[in-house]
Amino acid sequence: MTYALVAYAATAILWIAYLLWLSRRVARARGE
Amino acid sequence: MNESTATPARWWNATGRVLWLLALALVSASWWAAAAYAPVEAQMGPVQKIVYVHVPSAIVTLIAFGLTFAASIAFLTTKQWRWDAIAAASCELGMVFATVVLITGPLWARSAWNTWWTWEPRLTSFLILWILYAGYHVVRGSLHSASRRTVSSVLGIVLFVNLPIVWKSVEWWRGSLHPRNVTMTGEMRETLLLSMAAWFVFFAAALVSRLRLEWIREAVAERA
Image (cartoon, rainbow over all chains, first blue to last red):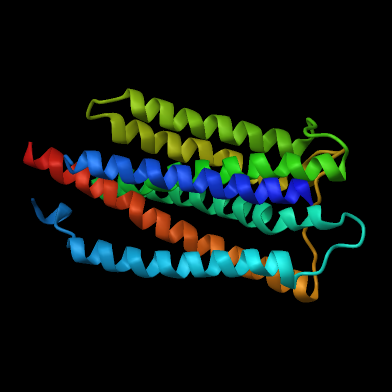
């Protein structure tokens, strides 16, 4: 059960981190 | 802004919003289904539920790199920058999906094979795939000349050779521990299909968002 929870949590964290990085790059490209 | 970058902002916002709403609803539903709807597998127990995120991520990885391949060919044929943008955006998302596969796989393997990692054909070929596509981004990021798009496209085509190797590795080499096919029935199958649909829509939503960045960069470069 722990491994499954870690797998799902890691997936969520990785995607959230990527989307935050993407939104920062969009803001920077716009010159904000 | 010329015609090539004149895609209306309204289109990006509307399409992106609809896709993101759909993606988040489907991913939430698939996670609920994995937790509460799909039964616990008799032999492996709850750890088997990793399959519902691992397998869709692996398939979307191959779709993303396949799209990079197709868009790279389209760029070299037409020389239209938007194909290069699609190739690069898809490749970046493919890397994130591949990373999910490389994180969730060992967590499953620890329970199934009593080891985090083994150098068997599917795992090894997938790791090589990840390293080589990381190289695509390193090369692309290091080039700032006019040849950047052409070099990236050639890489996007050449690296595609790895995809059939990963796909067929469980058949071509002996001693593969990795399951060849995922055969499920009933609620497990429904949950897996829902998860695949969810992560595919998630990929589409993320691709639109990532492409938006390329469009903004191109528009800024044209103005400069």
